[in-house]
Length: 496
Image 1 (tube, rainbow, N blue to C red):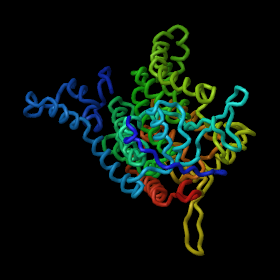
Image 2: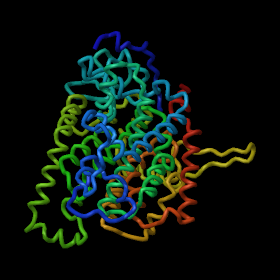
Image 3: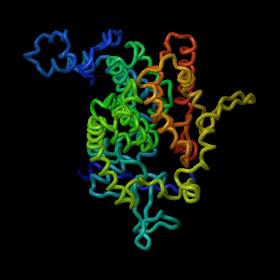
Image 4: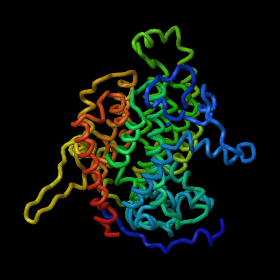
């Protein structure tokens, strides 16, 4: 790409002293949701009552295909448009400018320029970048005065940069990651509805279309997804994209029906948000013991292992290519296949803890539990003021639907696979060296929030129940507060 398309900003380094389609194998239950359009245009045409082709279909095949697609996915399209409009409105002036932490843009532009590291002369700041220095043949973290041979990298998994690559090719360093994040956020809401509709058609839930619309809007505006989707920035953008990829992964992983696609989307999700590697347990459970008699299926595995092994191998084949590329990239950058860069943060407030205890340690458990469950809003009477702790806020406030997950009215087939997936995805975050730092709520919980909402969807609680309505309203109100009041690290600390 020509230099005119990738005009570099003036260098302004800032020292940082701290800082996932149904098949026709089984009849679709006669629920209100199954009366909705089928999960894909192909499925719609294969149904017993195919839609009448629009007038002029032979003369305008493209127009006919578009109309058919819109007919099949009209609810998803409407949800996308509504979510995009609301999220972009709350993003406000941010929507029209690049965020203050556009790391993935700089990574994508470096690739387009033929280099695997980032040019230190164009770094917009020094926040959460990895700096590598070779000392006696070993890669170590840069310390003290910077040297000419020091090499700079994005200290996060790289898949978001891959997605941004064609847009960065057009706009260069000036690509707007904030509006891009709003688009991905709106897409994630539509994908979550599509997942819920698919589960209803498969008989995994008894939710109708209206219920699924409400639950999709709960994801959008009644969880921490709300404030994360409107900010851009490397930390929040990756989490929003992780939600979208989780929806695609789960859809293909249910009953291990599409193992290759499940593997592909799984690898994309993991290379967006590393903790999602533990969500692979969901596919393993669906492949080995989909139920309903899981214990009998596990006992039969020694003599009936071939079908399960085949699914696992296909899953690995789908996930393998991206995983191998990422491992090779990590070895090139940091000398280890599983290192994404956090051990090489330059001049970061967490370096002392990492050096002493590592990235994961029991030492961090107490403060992470406080950030996730115990921190409450701060009330001041003189002057009257309601504020939050920027290091965390209880999930019982930011996702109050949790209380109904503790006492489900039904425990269908997916109950335990979803709960176990939540557990394995949540535990690493509780032992991680960082609570999420400047945030509204415990933002790491967004990695498993889709699974929590799926648990509510299958849990049997009516959305017309007064207690449920009250809790839903509370969640929306709290997260509305977060969307309008949150001041992040770049604003609160750096005043950018």
